[in-house]
Image (cartoon, rainbow, N blue to C red; front, top):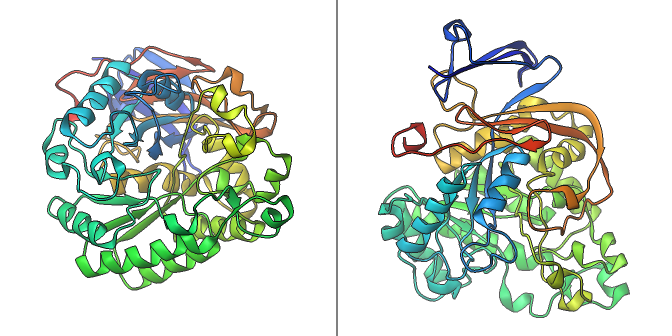
Length: 437
């Protein structure tokens, strides 16, 4: 029997106690007799392992930007024990073969549970539905589908997708961006874009798609997830839809909780992202919505790029930011003035995303579930240095910023995959184990 006893950790509800891990599952501390490892967690906060519903691991096809292995290592360093790998790879993850490849690469890496996301349409082109059923029935057991990076703009295609996944309680994760309203857009449309002379990206381009899609979801009775919500108007639409009982969930990124379009005045392409950084008013609306549950989860939208795709003039630069290794500290900082507790952090970064995604062994510290856990030191000021990160991407908008929360240890099904600032040993995923439940 392999057992670990973590002593005197502070739980999300503020109480203190011991946590026992036996053979990869949380156990009663009384059952951890003569534990193999004892960890003193006095002063540390214990959270369920974080779950990211929105990452870009780039493999297959863009291994110059990231691989499943490097992205998995970054996840472990950020406290993530499960990440959803978006479908915009090359080839696109629109077949059972590609999602199974990503699934196998994740298991071979062993630093986080990699959950493939299937494409909604063939080639992300928005016209023909991809092999949704085949991906759902594959060894990867895909349940979430997204054309992220592209909007499923055709309402008929979106309706058919929602109808199709309803058969197996799947979910369509929409990148809400009306393409005709954002042609050539470089940043948020507003006072700053007018002053800088950059083509603007209006809030209504996001909001109009959300309005359409929540009505389609209501009509079909299916599940809709709105990716990277960025505007105050989007928040109100989602709040309205939830009040009507529509099966909609939503996410916000860490960077949209703290950064605004004022950053673009620097013309530093590290701040170029899709959807764009919005206004201070939008930031405050997003924070309030995350606090009150209108927005369900934080998704990083971790999007690594090679230096040559970012170290260019603004208009030629790729859109996207890395984020897994700074997500928890950034969210804790952004929400500090809203009386956002440790249990709230656990809710939006672990419990709720695990629930939406159907990951039964993630999202709680309950005895008998997978021992997916992160130990966190609060009030631990440190300066963000992307050059020290595990991800291949260096395009972090938080370079040089001081944050006050630090990841200490990450456990993946009881395996200590990250410890005191260094990667540990990966988990050997086998055919038998709780990760197959």
